[in-house]
Length: 484
Image (cartoon, rainbow, N blue to C red):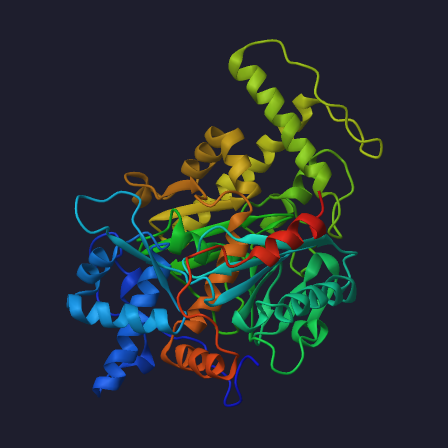
């Protein structure tokens, strides 16, 4: 049973050990406060964490020799560490794709029976559940369903899906459930989603994962998307960055040395609920007036065209608006006659491509204006966009940039912070960030000790097997459960 009996896992407290150099930089030098080695045993435990952390952060792409140099360890030490970690099914090695003559170079990576993270992206109208392995490679989505917008409608079915995974053949390998949610999170379990009327929803209670379940790590979607961008995207190696995740509306995160700032009540980053543009003065469902999110996001696109917005409905319509805007943008760019767009669904009011492009332009202008204000206030090196932000930037980069630069103070104009779309695609950030939250807690001396204890209680398996996908069960489920 996971986790073994005993005190609950503490959350990993991460800090920079040194400034770091090379590609690994800050990421490979993160250590836990409790890893200050005083004995040879503590030093070995500390180095085990460092090695696994390095393998995870590099995406399992470094050779053993490269890791040895980057971690400044002796070759013999790394050899002993790799052997021990392989024995405990925490990693395995495979030959590098390309190598010089002689003995093939080995690349440490996830073990076929190694630890797994469940990652959840809970949106205002649906959720996805993915299985992830050490190394942060693309997640295998094993389930995904729409919901009716109520806490019970969303979380009861999600809890059943999680229990199905943790109760299956690979369930003993699940070391945590990371969950991204479209709203502020307090006390690690209480969720507010203003557009749906959720106030202080106890997520853990409704999921009902049961005794002995893997620990739940609940976080805000924009903050987790920012974490993912800092670990594996455009903000990697950036000292101070701002990330904006745009869905029905938008949220964000301020990241310092790759870590999102949480704030006094763990709700920092709600940039979408600041009055940054001086535009709409109506009251938002969050309780504030004139929120930036009223002008940026899927709901804003619907409002610009006089369509009903809010309540977690209308995402398909917002995507069709973007598709029509893309058709118009491409026609204007190519200066060729526009082809007739695909007819909208029967329940969707018709929208001319020119109107759609105008709605995108208005949303992009509001986005750029708000980014300018954030840069004036926070002085980041870079601002990254995920969710609908990727498509908005592709369609209206000039509009966003002009509005952004127009709002900058003179002190920022000579070297303005760059704006960039996410390197993880529009929708990949929240799931990846949820996965990272699980491995942040697991890749500690306590986490590895708990894995060793739990493994000793399980039926022994063959220790050494060829590296294969750890999510065969999940991939099969994906083919039958995920909506088309």
